[in-house]
Length: 237
Length: 237
Image (tube, rainbow over all chains, first blue to last red; front, side):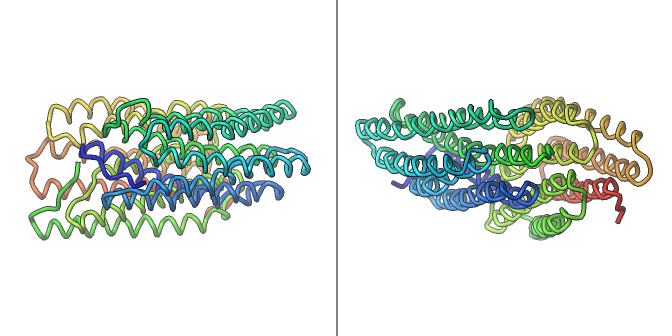
């Protein structure tokens, strides 16, 4: 479950720097989102607050992973603990600013939130296994809720994008692109140790891939959420 | 990649103190900018919030560099990780308060932000190399986006300065001076180990030079941004 540090000193330093970079970006985004809550209309403020909580929690986990890496072994469980908290929250923040009716939002939450928990729970046994068959099995199982969530959310985003006009529609379309592109990084990074021989380079790529995906899926996506909320509040700044 | 502490005890202590000083100034500025967000008109508040995030992130990195120095070796990567996050943000905070049209701002962001990333990415291999030829090559390569950014920004600042009158124009002119003077310190500090024999004195000068440049380019520049925003909000205090 623990990832021990890499023998290649340069690659080891690179992952160390990437984890520190992740910590700094998440905590910076945390402060920024906190300052922006009151800049949107009342009904969207909780969406921006949830964005802040997401990157705050991610910042804590990146700090812990970075500390572990510095001390010689990183607990992979932090990534899954982080996702278990933040991915349902990402779904919730999106639904808050998307402008769906309250009933529809409730229905979407009660199917999508359990699906995210299932997805992450099914991914974990494969991630920590060193057996390729186990990794593939749990990858396929986790991909079922993953695809369900992604199709549902992108469908909602597309519907919302064509329901709206002007700045709001543009902001929703940008959010859709960020969602689709960044989410696809996760299943690919997961498969790196299955497809390739596990070298220091592959392990470094996996760690850095997850870090970049987390920064975009939480930080950049939070910014897209803020843009939607600002556009809806009649303020495009 | 790691800078080990200096043999000269006095110089070593001097750098240690400079890094602690940098941490204190950045975190002080962070708190100050946070308190000032609401003191400017709504459309400039995100600019001041970004200024706060910049010095907050820099404070984190100075704390880490200072801790490393105290323990016997400093990771030079922290400077570059810091610049990779904060330099694009400095460009963004400037564009928010400069009063350019939204379309022009978007266009400037999409050329300048990638240019800052290119500049920092090209600087790093030269910084960590001990070969003078490599250092020169990457210095020249990084100077291309550097000069592009500096010319573009100073052009925008000059145009904005003559578009405006009174307090706003004065505040923009001060910001231009701070930008030009502080940015020029970086390529010079970078070249210190190439031009001179690397002694403890030269290494201390490089570290302290970067620290002073960071304090002015992020802290003092953030204050200039705040002044522009306050002048534009019809409040010159």
